Image (cartoon, rainbow, N blue to C red; front, side):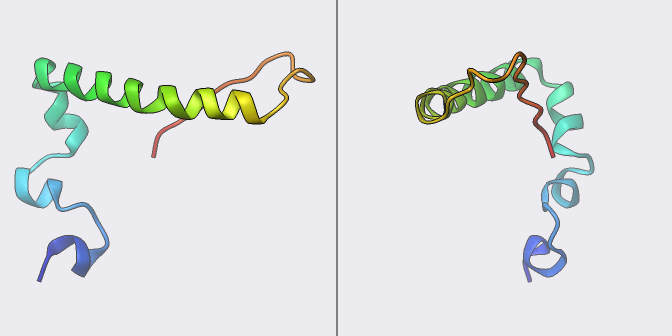
Amino acid sequence: MNTSVRTGESAFRHLNGQSVWEYRSTRPDENAIFNRAMTANSRGAIEAVIAAYDFSSFRHVADIGGW
């Protein structure tokens, strides 16, 4: 049975012996590609959020992400 289905956890550590973040930290070229992809993915969402919500009543707005 698939590790992710069985445990509810990412199978990445099971398959690679380290977390995805540890893996990327040792592969700067791959990490740069990942970071560019995440930035590109966020751009469309950011534009939609800004268009849909009035942030004018706030002095500061922060995007605190991660999991």
